[in-house]
Image (cartoon, rainbow, N blue to C red; front, side, top):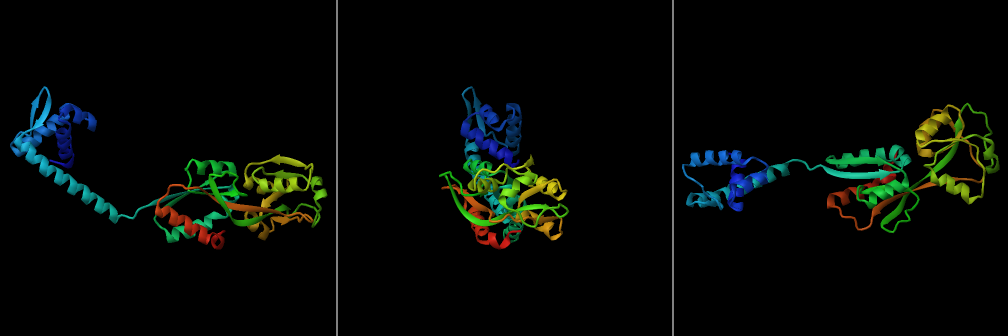
Length: 292
């Protein structure tokens, strides 16, 4: 006798049919009949009266049903109680724009894991529209985008601002400072991911830039700039190491500054449990102090 046999016995009693119980458990009727017959032989009593109308409990079967129900309940309670001894691993899904995903959040998530060791965090990279889409579909719990979200279904608040710098290889010959009107004189490696740069340039009027090529990856843009292929706009958080090691240098633009305002977004009235809410509150509280 095992728990599987006991639960199959209860299915037969409930459905009043061996064939229906077999279908429910995805086993053959003959296999179920053999298990039942083996248990009846062990008990020394028939548990069901078989007929064309199905299977009905005998007197012995009625007694067996009473105790089997108790046994199965006690077994389920035991399994539940044992499972409660194991640490529960909670899932948290975050979507973020590349500069935040790759350069800002890893240190924060390291601190989160220290305080919530049993949480499993997935960090997904995507442009702001993709991040918004994933949160609206409730595939992510929180997101980080550039600028506030225009979507009414999402709440957003600014969590930090990072300056975007014009940089060049340390070996590139160029002035220590340029004006905005001089910018078209220099070849640019462009990244369409930095919408804040385009918005800032649009705000000062039309400017025909000398864009050599447009790259999706900020890392690719940075590598091209280091190799002297052209100047590039890059977030400060992504180039701190290269500035320190003198692989890159900042080329200030007179009276022109670009800030990448990063907003944290959540879906309005999103269904989430208390553990998720606690994790999100902790990230909001410690984000500024733990950014890389």
